[in-house]
Image 1 (cartoon, rainbow, N blue to C red):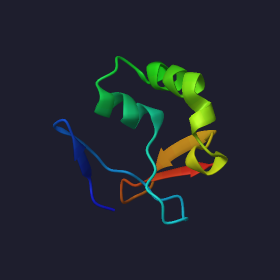
Image 2 (cartoon, rainbow, N blue to C red; image 1 turned 135 degrees about the vertical axis):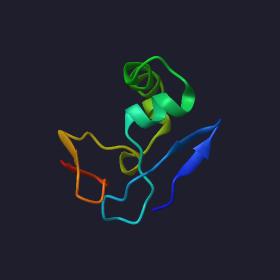
Image 3 (tube, rainbow, N blue to C red; image 1 turned 45 degrees about the horizontal axis):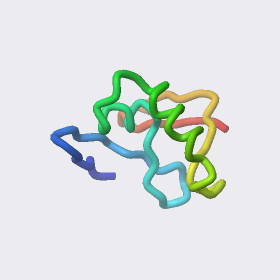
Image 4 (cartoon, helix red, strand yellow; image 1 turned 135 degrees about the horizontal axis):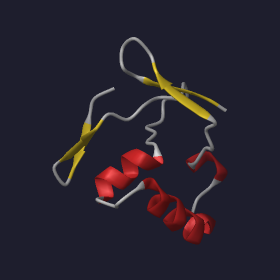
Length: 74
């Protein structure tokens, strides 16, 4: 997947096998220039009624494979 750029920040999204573009809360914090990912979590929690279940995931473990791509488990 190609890196995406927003406000001079380039982030490499990942594909969890469903063909959709996914970002971690840490990615979103960097893109939005927030101090940390907790700010993104608070923003989501205040507005979660605007998201469907398919638009977010809770991930218990993340790691990078040999190609530096993010892998995660649900």
